[in-house]
Image 1 (cartoon, rainbow, N blue to C red):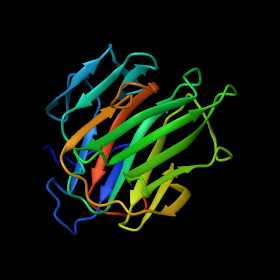
Image 2 (cartoon, rainbow, N blue to C red):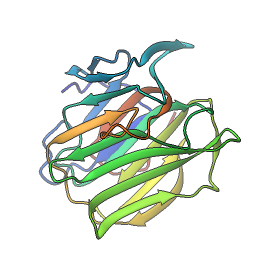
Image 3 (cartoon, rainbow, N blue to C red):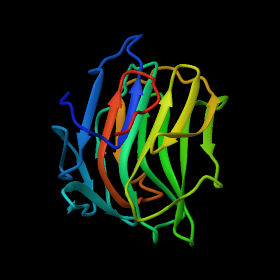
Amino acid sequence: MNTRNVTAIFLITFGTAGCATGPAQQTWRLERADVIDGHAAKVLGTPAAINDGGRKALCFNGVSDGIIVPINPVEGWPRFTIEVLFRPDGDGPEEQRFLHIQDEAERRVLLETRVTREHTWSLDTFLHAAASDRLTLLDRSKSQATDRWYRAALVYDGVTMSHYVDGVKQLEGAVRFPPMSAGRISLGVRLNRIHWFKGCIAEVRFTAEARPPAFR
């Protein structure tokens, strides 16, 4: 896996303690759909590569575009932070999943948007380890305008899950979430190909440490 030091917008940081199997930090730049950070990806539809003021990204149509990468970038990490640099469109579906990780035990990590007809969006994050060990963080009163770039982050410190938009903590809650095993990750759609994302993703970063994101 590539450990280049790159600025990212989606960051997941998992702590270095425990039996981590991957590098302590990975940054994925989404510049082409078929290869993500050196990994061959399954391409759904035709995600479009763009250059937005010098920022390269992949854009998804909210209907049929997505990417599936056959690895779990946070495998074995007991703590983590996920940051994503993305631009949600204002005319997409109400419920969208733009990042989904799932392992062999069906433990899941999801980052989602809830988009309104007024062209605002709220961040929805989800950890699921078992029927009794799961947590959704969503507050629709905490909303932002669509059609601009944001940095979203999900942080898990081994006890507490929290999420941030542009470095500002919005919500947190306690949940048990053991380290994940091998699995897959999808971008632009949920792994079972529902709840498609309409918008663009520029970068995703995974770090094996739980810490509040610091954005420049």
